[in-house]
Length: 259
Image 1 (cartoon, rainbow, N blue to C red):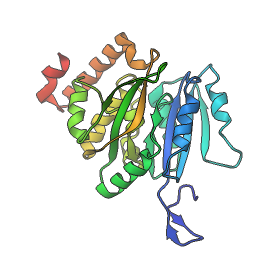
Image 2 (image 1 turned 90 degrees about the horizontal axis):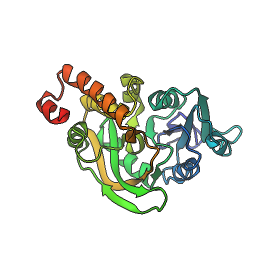
Image 3 (image 1 turned 90 degrees about the vertical axis):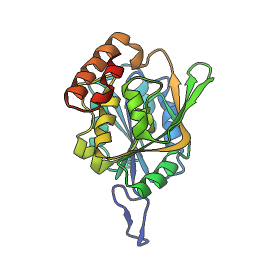
């Protein structure tokens, strides 16, 4: 494997593009090992994984360190002070080399075919980003709470903006072209709970948000998730709405969204 290069010089053949998996982590000791295992088990092989520890005080970083081999870039651990998930993702992107960037939250899981299916789709579509379906499951029991699937990511984005149904689960479903991600300058650290939605709205202005119908992510439901902090969620969404609608975008559904 040649990291950061699409050409195998020894064989003289074009290799699969490198995909960088960026995992922001905060107090995720209970889940990070299973998450890392699912990322390392991908049938798409040309992958590097960058875990950004956002100032955790648990043993999460120690768990990740066990996967970091000397002289190998297969798994990297970057440690920073606590600055929020948006900053952690941006740090991970800057520390990575891949032509494509895949996002994965530290408590979610991937199907082993996730990157293979999305890469086959995205390399042929020319879209800036691709998402996929996901299954919600209970943390303690593993019991399924339903499946969310998309055939048109751009159409689903409007429903997400209005908080109708489930969102695109961008932090674990998205596969993004690095060139587009760099042009966008990553995630806006001013947002917390709604940072993913704000990012998706900007991405939607660049081009269509492609989606594959397969369910390739398992979304873990547990009490520590950010969106359960309702007061912060409400304030964050209000700030996002002020920004979106003042800018003239999506004004046709402003009343519906604010309701």
